[in-house]
Image (cartoon, rainbow, N blue to C red; front, side):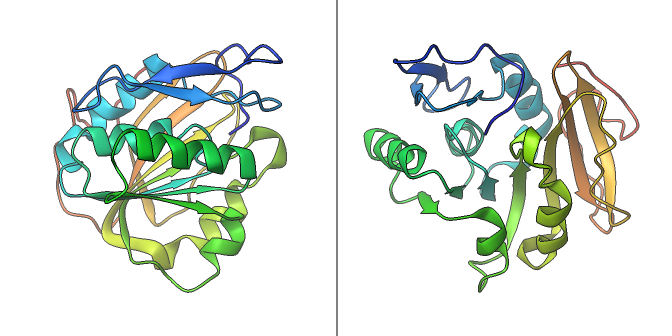
Length: 213
């Protein structure tokens, strides 16, 4: 994922991000030296997973444009049942596989080296309860990914969408905004399918509330 929000990794060496909570709390995830790669910040992820924690146990998670895997692996650490991590870049996909092996998570985490849009248009790999959609900002892939996503969704699915702070990116009329926050560099928004039942997610779970991660 190429996005604003954190300082880029200095050229010529890797950086890392950490898993914030759950069984792998404190584990470092490598951030390979890839042009423009900027994982979602610790602060934004902590806020997001506070929102999501009640629905993660047993959930199937789809992490699109996975990058470092920080979102999908954090979800597994906090109780998700399984995660599909989709990453096109071969070096990033190989790094993800190595991380999954190091965490002994191969029975739960699958790394798919694939173009996200091509994968979403291919035969289904099941339906998912939680989807993370955080594409490279400069390529404007939100609309195409969202259009292809519905067959992959559970009836009461949740969607995390990250976009530039001043953007008007929305998932469409089938979704209901649950929580959102804005930082200087990004908008962080959590949605639920409009047909989903009542749920309480994290503190101050009023669907109209706004928070700043």
